[in-house]
Length: 314
Image (tube, rainbow, N blue to C red; front, side, top):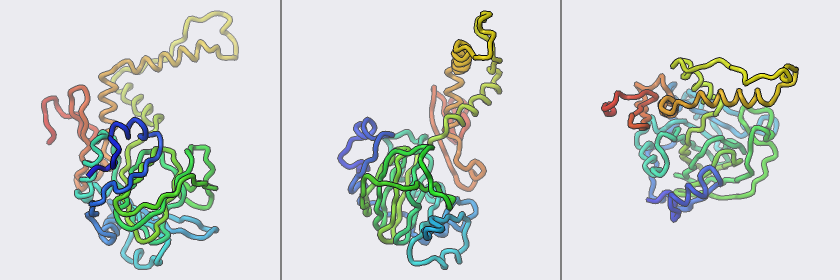
């Protein structure tokens, strides 16, 4: 099976990755989902599993969301249409789902976040929205219509009256109907809206995209812990600088001092490996079996921690 169809990984990474959407017809035509809709609902009953139930309401209450864990009666009371069940990190609870990662071996494994599985009744969807991470949307059962819009950001107007981040006045530029085996790749920030044409199941293979400000804050803690933090110092001063207005020299000097903190290549590499391999659910490692692994500068990292040099993965 070639997940990108006729497109080579090199061409995909050069022309599409984090740049523009890609529709692949017949990506994984022979793929059989390893769990049923009932089994997915069963996972959503577990308190350790992150799940959501989104219903499409009317104009007064559009796209309402409830969070799991659920009970069986919650599903028994659902209508025949206009709802979606979403379960995060199904790859942690169903090893057969995790086998899908092998199809994306042209991307670093440590960049992945999880595989979310959604089951939708006819008309079900989570509304027009955008994500800030890369995602491959694999249609495994039924049919879902995807409308693709423009690039969005923090200034994009959102709909009020719902907890979900719904794009207000969404205007699609593409309209694609996906059937079993079809796949859609979406880079960060692209507006999209998927609606089930019939009962359908979609696998979302998502990739980590932490905020740079969060990464800086975490790195600052690490620098301080290693005794590498420094106090601000002035540039060479002149009497003319003694005024309320901040001379640009101060700004440039402050930036230079901050950047100098990064002149510790081995430490930054060690921090980055630990940061990017940190488990998604650290408090559930014993039950989930989550294993995030990477190598950097000859050292192996597992679930956010370096292994002793020469030590293999336990």
